[in-house]
Image (cartoon, rainbow, N blue to C red; front, side):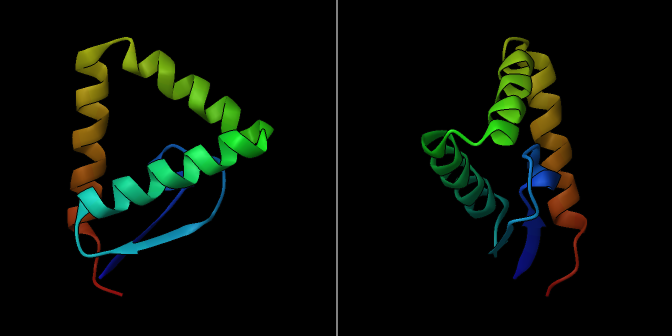
Length: 78
């Protein structure tokens, strides 16, 4: 099992996500982001706006996603 934080995944806090695959971590991060959105958390809303800007450029978003996958793959098991 590996661990990444919300902040490592482009978010705004140090919430930890533990999973065996990058896809699981990405889903946990997405769910956390939706929860923070519903709560109106200003820091997370700002991070989401930055992600939206990145998503407007498909190549940039793909590069970002692949860099996070590589970061996950390089992590040691916790």
